Amino acid sequence: LNMSRRLTRPLADALMTKTSGNPMFVRQLMASLNADGLIFYSATFRRWCWDIKAIREKDVADEVVDLLVGRMKGYGPEVELLLQVAACFGTSFDPKALCLCFTDDGNVDSI
Image (cartoon, rainbow, N blue to C red; front, side):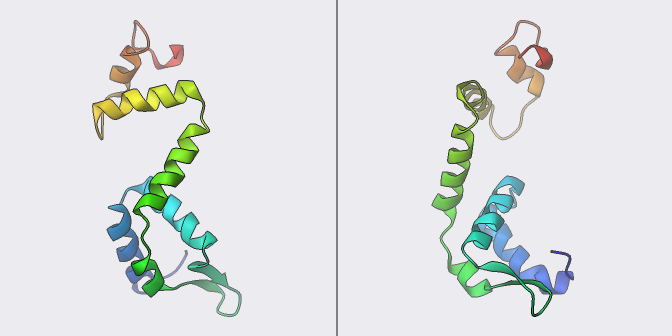
């Protein structure tokens, strides 16, 4: 947003609360809020503006999940299977371990 921390702190706090700081969720939420007109660029003020009250009141849990599921379905069946297996590992894992589920040698390039 290219603005001071003092000005963006309320927005950052609201985004953190709604997304638990997950960067992918933050990005999706910001795009959604912009599409809904809750975050917009003001030519008058020559900066980004937002309706913090509406953002705090907005129920976004289902919306963010729907956005991500829709995006993942567009990747195709191979990537969908890869994501399903990756989800079984939890929130973090060694990519080589995931590769071993699909290859004999754990080589990422052979997927």
